[in-house]
Image (cartoon, rainbow, N blue to C red):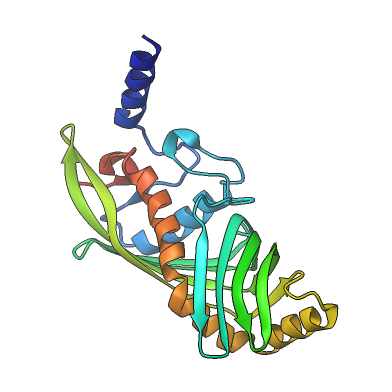
Length: 247
């Protein structure tokens, strides 16, 4: 009986149709100032997520604790390290400096640029491999700070019908990150403290090269998180409640 009740409640939650949260700004798809309205609406909505909205599948963003782990792997004959980041916490997603949105109704594409003051990425960290002549086998912590990062996100949308209502969902999304600076602080990678200091100094001095490497390896991690959160909202709220002017 208990199992039946749990399944029933899960189905009710999944199938529930919701209106746009009353504190979220609603825009008109046919309006001449749609892009400006969306820019304001998206920024204000994100800034409200200092508390979660579980009924919409929207998490707390301060701090944001993504369920995903992140992996990086690189190497050559002398240096090869596989890194794992987990128990991740990110701060700063509600501290937005500027938002620019542009929506092509005909092409069903949402272009979104968001600039944050800074994002702080804290995590547990594991690394296995070798660094020149030094073996690396550690479990420690890592801190990464992005200064004035701009996320350029593209969401390709499609329309579909559910329960005689029109809905949107995001497909085939992409993300690019541009920033003013990035700093690192990795703890206890080597037994020798001098080596740890030199590692962090070297990474901070060469942050631009590392940022290019991360740009080539991290987009899947970011876009999976962003698209899932966006789709959590889209699958709950019909297009007619999400926007005015829906035909």
